[in-house]
Length: 227
Image (cartoon, rainbow, N blue to C red; front, side, top):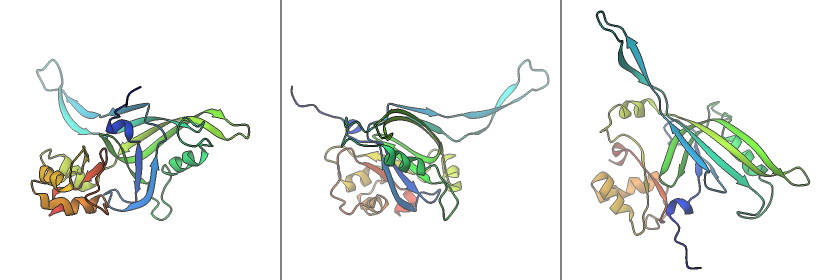
């Protein structure tokens, strides 16, 4: 059998980073990474419209009255049978994931999470985690489980205002690094100036700006943050 070329998405695993604040500027240092790629990922966006009946019309007029936060559901398989990595209980990995649904002890606020995998990136809070255990060992430790994660978008007041202006450079975005790309080249394409590599490196906590990896996901800070 010849060599198999894997895409960046196949190589990457779903990763969830936790932050203490809704502006996603205070990382907690907590990172959770899936054993296997998501089996399913669904996205939901809902806009609200208000019907107003005008005199002399046969049908009400629909006027946009606002939108609800975007929602994402991620279906995961956790497997400790040895299919991926060393065999053993998935209990600790599952406990670490469920901990992200709790409130932070010092702020009494939920963890704000950045979930990313390949070109997918979503920032919000974990609103629900449904776990179904599929397999146990003789000691009763879980070896396999499916998890349905529900996330709801969380935006700061500043980001909400910026999002209402689609052309605004004030929104955070993500960038999937391709083979051979450099930080200054990415900065030139995104911000129009290669000198913006410094705030880009700082935003991603890159100790070695020249050590980009193919398939690495970068957070692109707002243009104002790069000035």
